[in-house]
Length: 177
Image (cartoon, rainbow, N blue to C red; front, side):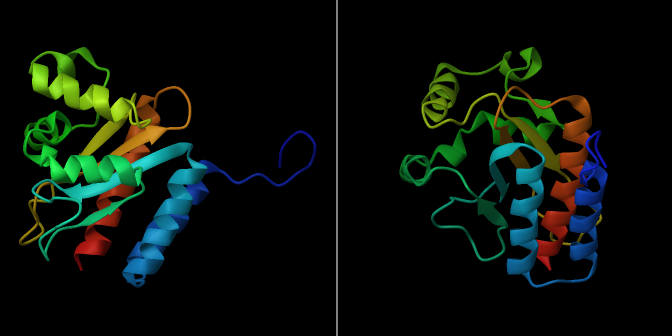
């Protein structure tokens, strides 16, 4: 309860509820709906959980792909085959830890084409995000994947990125079943 006696939901309870839904082997539609609700409560405006090789409009059958990115951006991204040069995907493939799209380490080796991609994405509200790589080498047949999120305001802090990393792993495993 808060100072006025109103019931408040703890962030850890929201996360735990999602984890339990995944552990109950709920149908994928139920898991995705729960995920959307969970990250919304965590202050996330946009998200994309996807297998790195996937074209968002023509994914292979084994790909994990769920997002709420603006449709116009997804069309542009797909038509231009930007998944092939996306610096977020490339960085997530090489680095196991969550990272901010604004970090110096991430931006250090971007090509002019990759900077242009990020600039174009920002025109659709996809900026100041962070990505949680998903590397599940213990899961047979698991493809490289990641969860990218764009908060409603500001940037995500280190604790939020750890919570999102946990959510990403559970979502990916549930959808891969």
